[in-house]
Every structure is written in C-alpha cells, then in structure tokens.
Image 1 (cartoon, helix red, strand yellow):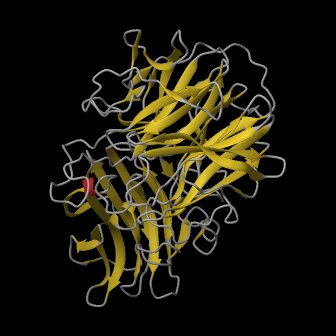
Image 2: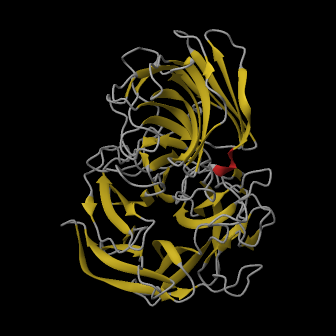
Image 3: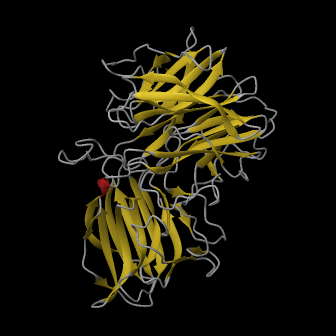
Length: 561
C-alpha cells in the first residue's frame, strides 16, 4: 500500500507525467526560489527531489512579489522527446485586478537545461498544455474577473499554441462558463475519442474538490459528470473526489488533481490535500477572514489515489480498503502491479532506481553546492548571500536586508513535514550593533515567524533573544540575554504538535537552556495569515545586517528531523 501524503509539507497543485518507466511530479513554489519542485519515481511509491527547472533569474524574477504570490500551479507534459512546463507568475493578487503572467519552458532532458521562457496569454492562472493526436497543441486555463459583480462564478478558456513559432494562435474561446460552480486548475486528457476536462472546484480550503467534464470535440460543449458523491448537499459541485463533508479523515482540502496511466494500464490521480494541526488549533471567531476555521501549518501536500473507469467512460476513485467506488480520498492506496521489464523510451531517466535517496536530516555543509531541499525567498543565494567555500565545512551567510524584505534576504529554509519535529544549528557570529542578527527561524511568510537569534545590544553586549512576528505585530518573548563573545552558539527549536520550545547553549557545552515559554505556533498556517495562505511553514537559518556592512555568520550544520 502507498501511504498518503506522498510529498509531505508544502507541495501543492501537483502535475504528473510518465515517460517510459519514470514518473515526474511538478508542484507550486510561490515566492520560494528556485521555481517549481520536481520529484521523480519509478513506482509511484518512493519519490526523490531532482533539479529545479526554473533556476536562472532570466527565467524567473520574483523580486517584489508578495506572500503566496509568484509561481502558481505548474503543468508538466511530454511529447515527442520534449518536456514542456507551463507556469504562472502572479505579481498582483490582493487587489481588484490580478496580474497573472503565463510562461512556457522546454527541455530535452528532465534534468535540464530548460529553455528561456516563452510568454503565453494572461487571461488567468493555472495554465495547462494538451498535445492532441494530430500534433496540434492547446493551452487551457481559468479566467480571472475583476468586474464587480463578477460576470460568472467560473470560466475556463482554450487557445491553440503554435509550437513551431512559439506563440498563441487563433482566438481564446470559452469552453466552460457557470453561474454557480467555480472551476480552476484545468487539465485536458484524451481517451477513447473523448476529451476530458479535469478541474479543481470550490476554492482550495476544506470545501475543495475535483470535478470532471467531457466532450467529443476539444472546443466543447462539455458535459459535467453529475453523479452526486456520497453526502452531496444542494449547491455542492459534483466532485468525483472531495473531503468537504468528512472533517475527521486524514486528507482534508482534497482537490486540484491530475491523472497518469501506468505502463500496465492502471490509472492514478495525484492531488493536493492538507492535514490540520493537532490540538484543535483554530482561528478565533473575531478575525477578519476564515473565522473559526482549522489551521494547516504544513500547508497543502501531495497525495495519490487509484482511479478506475466506469462502463460508460467516467473516471472514479477506487477504495482499496473495501474494493468499492468512492468519492472520499483514501489515506492508504493500492500500489501498482509489479512492473514488467520495460524498454525505456526516449527521454526517460536511464539511471533511475526504485528506492529514494535517504532523506536529508543533518547537513554539515561539507559540499560546494547547497542541497536541493533548501529554498530561498524570491532570489538565488549567490556569492553575495552565502558561501560554502569561504570556510570549508561551514556555510557562511552574509547579512543583508531585514526579514520583511521582498528583494534581498539572506535566508535558506526547508519544509515542515510533520507536527513533531526538531530543528538545530551551531553558529559562530559576532554582531557589533543591534541591527545585526542571525539565527534559527520558523516561518510562514515575511509577516509571520518565530525567530531565535543572536544580536548585540548597547547595554548588555552580545545577546540572544526570541522574536515573534504575527501578522506584522512584533513581540519579543524574552529580554536580551547576555552571552559570551567569541564563542559559538547552538540553537534549537523543539516542535511538539505544532507548539514550539526554544533552547540555546554556549560553546562546546551541550547543556541546552530553554529560552521563553512554549509558543503556540498555529499562526504559522494557511488560514491564520493576513496575506499568504497557499504555502506552508518553513524552518531555516538566516542573517540580517541593516547597517549595510554585510557582516557574516558561520553555520557548522543545520539539522531538521
């Protein structure tokens, strides 16, 4: 059995393909850089992170984008030896008129290099590319509507793409408009002369779901599969998968799916999902938005479901637990039949293996390249920000802009993947003024974080303190605690059911001292933040120097387990 989720922590909007005996999933990265996470598997069970396709600033410039903006809903496809990746860069979101720039990059090898981007139409986000049997290609996307009131609840358009000349051609035409059901995240698949339009429905919260429509003509009209799921209520979408009426199951928020066929003819669907924080962490009833809703610190994750086709040609979820058709996402899913010997086709990963590489736990910074699991905010961490060579075996980080910056932060982080974790680092840092800081950070976005850090105060000298920043409200949870100069500091965060305890020790002494009291970190979650609510909590190390001098901190290791 496969245990869900297969990609834990912040991995939303999955798009999946199979090339020969290899499977690849692309997921959204929003304001985190490099752009688009790619995972590889040969069995749909074990997944390994591989190179990011958007790893040059000529492909991706995220400077200035706000929380939860940036890269939305990539679509990965493959045709005749070429990989295609569509993605949206959202530059304006918390406003009346969204700016949704859509682009395409290509590669002959999944590991790159990927091309410079080709601009597509910008009607809306979630673009997807479909390769028809006759060689023609089409881009499908949702449409944003800034009018008040909106003309339609949901709208999907289709336009042809000329791959030879690399531009959109012909008119963009509506293939779905509705007054009641909002659809997004569209993908088109062709099977038995039917064009299937797979769309996420009903937002991306706990009411989320997945719908499917079909037509004999790619331009429509499309008929929605309207067999009501169990516990259907008036006004619901006809979701083939949803957890909206099952608050106690593990995989909440389920929707935004994509299909793949195995080499043995089995079908699977990957989708986003969320696991709510334990301990009844919920928004207060007096907040401006999402009052009383559960909090999801891990963000939206990626899960997988087994799919079968009905006699009249509709895809439905299959429950491996009782051999039945269901609309409820399953935590445990039957894995594919043992694969036969397969003659890998052009473009497949010839060196692939079925077992994933060991998960990165402790990083001793003993290589000259940063591990793929790290991401930074909006910009690459080049030699202006970090160095793995200046002091071999250590990561040197140069302090740059403050933690609110959307342009030049020195920060690297990894995903929170469980509600019980520990994070630890060992750092040498000698600040001279209070504007110089470095340490361990647990964050959701630039407006929400817990920062255990070393700084300097004119009254106490070198010191350690603990800062909580919740929706732009700053609160120091301890005094400035003096510590010795010219000695390293060990910093640790212990996360227990989403609650955080912070510790430090000085020099080689391993006796950890707790600083401050236990913090309810539930505010580092999708629903709790005033701006961002599409990503997930991240844990990392960072340095700031607001004087402009660029003083550095040296990190001996970073451990996350």
